[in-house]
Image 1 (cartoon, helix red, strand yellow):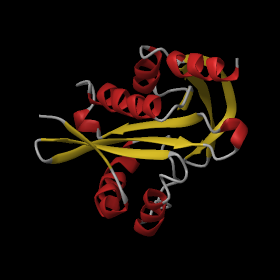
Image 2: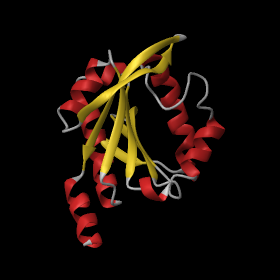
Image 3: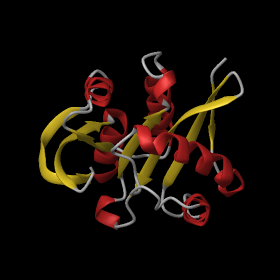
Image 4: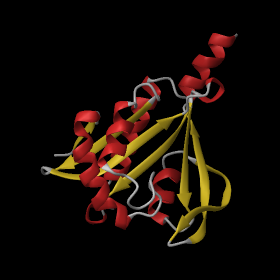
Length: 175
């Protein structure tokens, strides 16, 4: 049975181990290869509440299979939008786990009053484009040479989703 849990700094080692396993299989993660050390992830998880961010880990059959990250902005004018990252280990893909992680991350974002979620997807990452595209994210543009993978520039699609109930709440508060 799939279990999805929010991570905190006490879970940094667990997230670090999973990140190291997923890193060679996925090109568009948060950190560059080798950059996500245990200390880095511990600090990121420790600061997640103040940074309006959350990390979730998915576990199936006592195996960590993927994670989701929502990384909020601290600037007041942008503090209701966040970057979304989903990563699932290769052998667990195409079973709906990425979608379940995305749903859990979006639920947290809704509960925490975000109204815009953004994702930057490598232009050849068909699985991620399908996941986000069928989850009501829309392509807003192409980020030319936004990613460097194997020391080569790569384009990324800039995708976004509006959480309408939070956007309506914000408009009512202003009016």
